Length: 92
Image 1: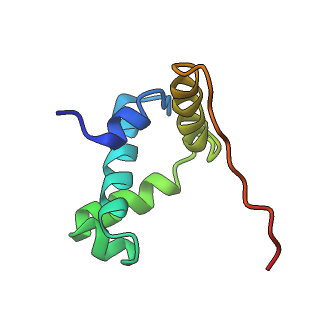
Image 2 (image 1 turned 90 degrees about the vertical axis):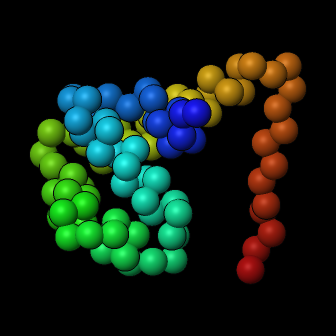
């Protein structure tokens, strides 16, 4: 079974399939332990270093990451006749 992050980020184009795979790995690691630090979520020094190197990469723009998520969201929306988009507008 394909993992949710690879499905959600399948439209990511970071210029290299290795970067696309690294993105999925980082997202999966962080999602499993959302309140953990990056080193804790990544599990080892190699994965932690790879995550930091990924975030410092000059080969793609930071907006390329959420753009992949937006494309997946739009594709899901198109599968339905009606989509409710609820927004909480109450002030704190």
